[in-house]
Image (cartoon, rainbow, N blue to C red; front, side, top):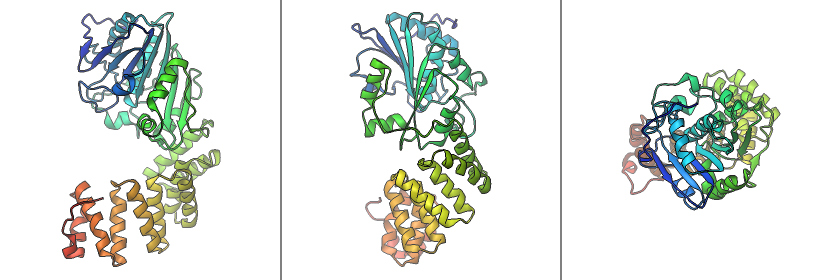
Length: 395
């Protein structure tokens, strides 16, 4: 039984309750990282959806493992306070949801409370929530600002023992999310949906490309998700492991090991863009330029807006001494991602070699705007001379 907290604030910078007397459904919404006090994730998205709503936020990106300000200083104490609020809405069904850190919070508190909410159906909709905290390449490890809580570092045993039905939605271009999801294949109460072309911020992606409000409302009403371009290549439980190990090997500069893992991932899922892209990087590092180019071509065909694949293809063309083709690839990259400084830097260097100095100006100005301490700036300004005078706009 969760620990009871005798002083529960129903309205604060970290909790907001919106009641709907005509509904027996209650949504508990957990905010993600870096949401300032007094604001809550999904506030506008949830407003038109019928139901009671409990909006929550955590301070200092704590991943909700140290409780929730105003509800309790431990997760169990906060869960007990939250339970009182939920019961006050007289629900027949409770849906816990949130993105990233909020997805983890939804699973954590949903799992704790599912066994306390007798005769109440409990479900969870997690957008990219981690199942394993604090590990290498995790957001909880890199973005958390509070002390790590090892007791909740692996949420899977808690989920297995709970009555909570979890639906995990994640992007099929995010290596960490793919790996995290792959570690749950043996848990019967977790369903996994990978959205083709989606990033870690998959709820934002859905809101921009599809209908996030409609998805949440349908899930709340039926427990099902709409027909979106879901990937089906993650059915093999070893795919995420091989992909992630290949990624780590690249970070460790072990290109041969990376190539082995990533080739295994591609064999399991030939049509996965991120696996093709990463295999291409490993092959480039090994000097296998034609194979690397082939895999980057496939990555772009599968995911035309993957800016890093164009950047990688530009690097290959530089190695193959195809300067003009490299310029085209770097231009495509910065068009998709104006903040890609490495691509802009190589683009400027390539344009200078082609004596296209005027074309360099907009890219130099863009670096000034986005990376003013870039060590290459002074060299570029010296080479461009009078042309380096700042223009009015940068792209």
